[in-house]
Length: 288
Length: 293
Image (tube, rainbow over all chains, first blue to last red; front, side, top):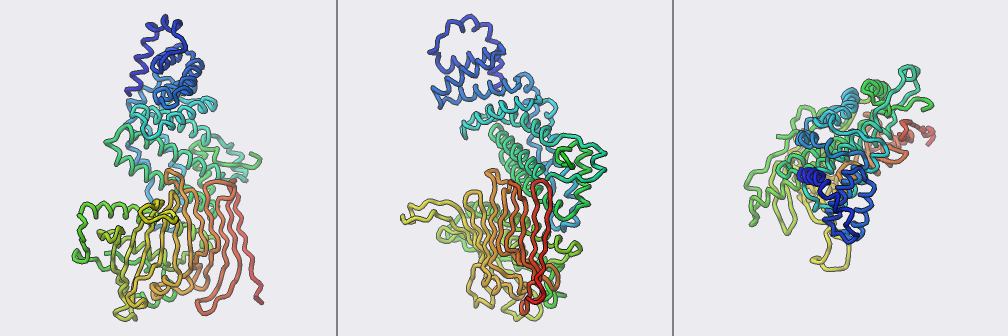
């Protein structure tokens, strides 16, 4: 939050500094460069801001404030405007309630007894992943190209390592949620024509399903890691949720694989569930 | 009180012996826990760490059981049969061990427990299996002195003693963690000497499994060799290779020899192969061995 307030304050200072900026030479110190870059971002000159910050970072690779500003510039280029995230940040604590989204284990139940449960659960997990975010609706949607810049912004913040400030960790969590939303729609959301499905020859694309489960699971874990950093008082609880998500993600990949091998009826049932939930990209029909 | 869960999935051998019996683990008394100058807090800390590892072993065992059940189902879709195995025994033992605080000896953490096997027909001294779970640090192999060696992982060893081992503890299962990889290794002969009364003879093997994880603990792959599983009262499988992967074109691969008979008479019936590809394609091949062999 502190970071966002800083950005807002810096933006409001744009006019004050605008006149001075023309006179500033190349020997600006890092603080000045960061300030200048925010002014450029605020003037919608994001590419110039990125250039300025890239040069500064190459001179001072250890300056994490510059790295963090550069991440912010790339996020901006990826369509992430600070203003759009303010309401999301206000609700971000809702993420700590992720445990409700985690599926119960199927201990002691035989595989055959579990078929329906697995099928339903697999379809439900994706909905949970999205519904659990109270802030999901307020997170901006990015295009495929924009998502590349958001990913790069996240990887820049990753380079800061364990010493990442709390506000930057929170910012990274929000960027990760943006990416999560993008991956969710890019990898899963799609329609399958009813006629095609009814004609038969469709099958679950297990590689796509499991790869998506893992990608989304990993992203959820990175979000939780950042929430732990930004909210140390909840670290213990969040750690438990993280373990549950790792376990559930692993079990789901195993369950979907088993399901496809042993039970064609359940496989059809799962396909229907995916179609009803708009997750058509997980199904491959003849000729697709 | 924990009950061994073989009641519903008994091997033919054990079935005869177990009917009408209730098994349990005898709980350790506080007197059996040696303090040896280690504070309660420290032991509770060690317990928490060990509990976490035991939890990982349980989770891995359950995943392995699921894959084995999958293979059993593929061989016979009506089969609900499953005998008590060394893996089941380890899961039961874990439940008991988690109840007790560990002792700390020479930098090693040891947890003890006692299992009572109330099978009819066993002599009194064969009804008790003593358990030790020992944790130790794994060091990088090098020629430098112990103090200078670099710790690279952790190992838990399950050892047991009973009437067949004359009170001597023998290692049955070793579980090693190095980085994000966990490895299981059963010692066939020792497992047999401890569990001979509980488990059908054909189900012992020097099986080993490797569980690899991504950095965030999500399962990346499972690779096993020489696993044994019963398929029915008269058939069992030696799973020579089992691979489950969360990447690449081949996501599941199981290659097994199917045998019929018991420990005294085994005859290879067929070779079975199960493959699941990333695009969802499933291939199940069974090659029967000609009856003359």
